[in-house]
Image (cartoon, rainbow, N blue to C red; front, side, top):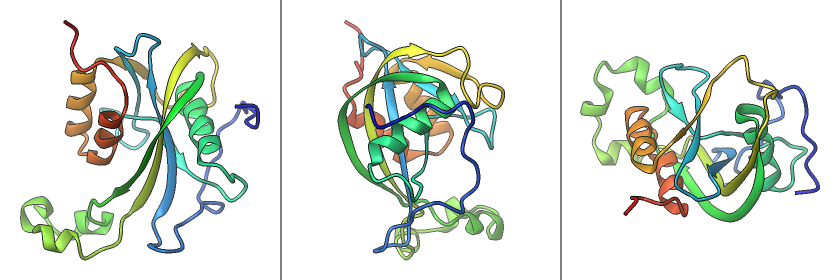
Length: 182
């Protein structure tokens, strides 16, 4: 995408973040980064939980008028991946309970029914794109903060379930990754 210029530093802070006018959800964009043969997906370490692996994504900022720009920027900053966006994977709402529920309930997952969870607006509204990776740069903005690693579909799915990230698994499932090798 010619509109995007790769920076040597990552953007930080949320003062320029964009939120949905309808739901109040934080707008986020990212990529499901596939190898050229579509058998592997690139994951990055979570910055908050180093033992968890996630897809590269981040908040849309007020100077970005195209979710693809944000997706490419975040993928560059977090994973150092450069490639071609081949399709939109659509919008996915993050319907996990608000973070403060985690602090207030010891076993919040067991204590909440589906009707409780559906009483709150989405935390985030994700806009994911499928990217075919051409290059992984040695130097990229968050190289000292997180690792990156290629995973098969099954291994990626297992990591996203372990990280309790169903919205990221939904994006993976919408991609053209090869599910099983014959």
